[in-house]
Structures are given as C-alpha cells and as structure tokens.
Length: 276
Image (cartoon, rainbow, N blue to C red; front, side):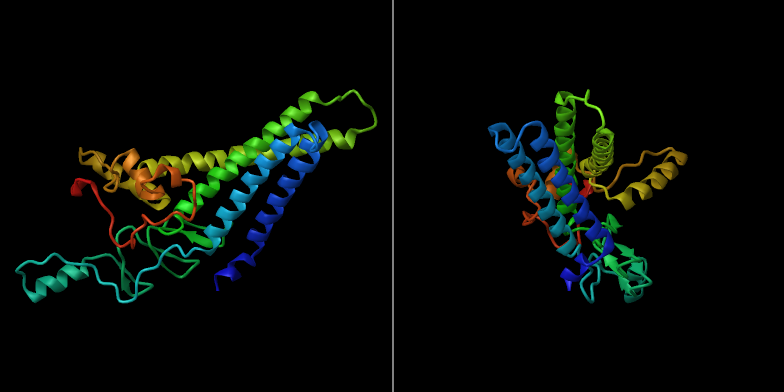
C-alpha cells in the first residue's frame, strides 16, 4: 500500500525536478566548463551523483515510512492512587481525546485531516511526500532537507564557476545565455528555499518542537506573559539532548535516514520535570 503513495503528481514532479537538476549540473555545466573526462570533472560529477543518490534515498524513506499511528485501544496510564471510581472516571475524561477518531491521544499527537487519523508527534502533512511528517519519519525528512540543500548549493557553485570561466563575447547565442541565467535563477531559488526550510527545522529540533507545537507555544507564551510568567516548551531538554532524541545518540549515524533504532513507541516523551 505504501508504494501507491509514489503515484501522485507532487511526487512525480519532485522526481522530474531532481532529474532536471541532475542533468543540467552534470551534462551541461560540469561537462561544458570542466569536462567529464577530466579528473576534476569526474570528481565533481561523482560527488554530485552521490548527493543526488542520498536525496532520492531519503525522499523514498520519507514517502514509504509510516509516520506513526496511535495503537488500537490505546488508553493513557493514570497514576495509581487511592481514589474512587468516580474520580478515576473524571481523570480519564480530562485526558486528551480525539473526537474524530473517538480515541485517546498520546502526548504530542494530532489529527491529520488529509490522512484521516491521529499521527504521533505530528509535525505537518507534506504534499511533496504524500505523507505526514511524524514521529517515525521526521528524521528522514530532516535528513532529506539537509541533503537537498547541500546538493542545490553544490549545483549553484558549479553554475557560478562555469559562468565565470565562459567566454560571453560570442554573438548569436542569446538562447544559451538565457538558459544559463534561467537555470542559475532556478537553482539559486531552490537553494534559498531549501536552506530556509533547513534552518527552520534545525531551530525546531534544537528546541525539540514540532511545527504545530511552535504555533501552540506562541499562544502559551502570550498567555504566560499576561500572567507574569515565563513559558518554556516542556519537552525542551537542551540542544544536544534534543538533537540526540531526534537524530540518535551516535553522531556518525545522524545523517543516515534509516538509522532509527533510538526511536521509541512515540507514546511518551521525556520532559524537563523528569530531570532527563
């Protein structure tokens, strides 16, 4: 069933864009400026091919990995204490509950209207991967954005380097000049867009937030200020610990999208109060 997600217009568009950027970078700019047969040209083409492979691999992992759903029959734990059955019933009534799914929600879980289900640690629904970005595939999404940014930046460098060494004094080749300008503008725009997205998710990961929690936190911070208090995201354990929780404890595996052995069930998360 997961492979059916690939058959969508946005995903096919991404593959076409990746193919176009790869083709013009390797077979036009590197070939035209350096030459693929030269050692420098071969080296640059191999580096960019490796980056393109990492992008495609991470992209497929994002698409095919289930972001994480609430287990059937999930009921949050209520701390054991000598309370009456009525008090216990009232405690369960106050726990997070999804009216659309008619089920309890673990912490940081939100209902996706597109997927029509609750997603663990949901960040957002992304049309470009035809999937939610949630607990189990957020790392793959983060790594995808990182590799895509690096690849576009590398392509930009190749285009700039080619433009610097090219002889633009020739006449009657205006379409070629226009192609260089248009390609450079497109790659530069992609680099800026992806770089901004990468910066945004670095910021969120450093604070152990999701996009949804960021906007919820803005309102919570405003309410706290009105009461003369200071708001802090409850799952923020410090930058390094936050990155370790998302990317893994081993820094060598941080940029491997399938190295997710550190990811738990997504039903509970450490907080500041736990002293973690």
